[in-house]
Amino acid sequence: MRDGLRLLKYAGDLAIDDGTGKIDVEKVRAAWKRLENWKILEKISALPRSLRVTMAAMYIAALDSRKPSVTTDEVFNWVGELRSLLKMEPVAISSVRRYISELETYGLVDIQRMSRGKGSGVERRYILSVNYDQLLEALRTDADLYAEVKQIVKGIIGAKVEVAREKRLL
Image (tube, rainbow, N blue to C red; front, side, top):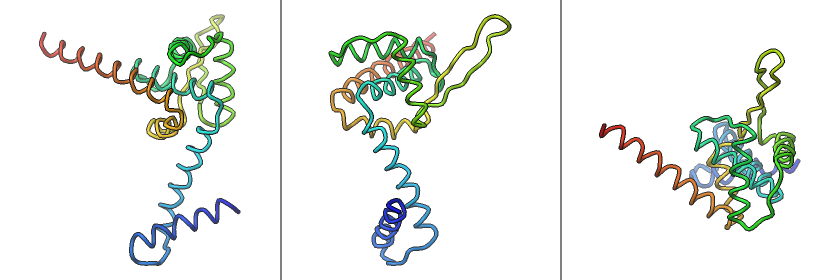
């Protein structure tokens, strides 16, 4: 019920901004996208800080590895780095796995399970289900975390640009 009312409100706002004053199918579709975005932002903003740190670590690990999917070890390393920068207590890798499972329950992370072959076990790779822009927008509610993520990302991108420049010069 609330979502329906919010959808109509957003569609009405779009109609007013458009100057037509009429709600049509296109305005409802645009309002639906806005509503979905709002729901994701609210969901991430309401998470405990440890889960937001884990999502931020997944984002950083994906940027650093240039792959959308990351391993537990990659996430764990960045969680440790972020928690240290934010002056939070360190956590064990089992806690990071638990955080990721909880994020999967919320629909914010997808887990890919791939067999390593007979007797070698299963590798788990994690992918954020949310758009990176949505994640960064939601992280703005935690100013310290957002500032640290922004600084780390700037360093990663700077290093990758430097490597690309060196390759061009060779």
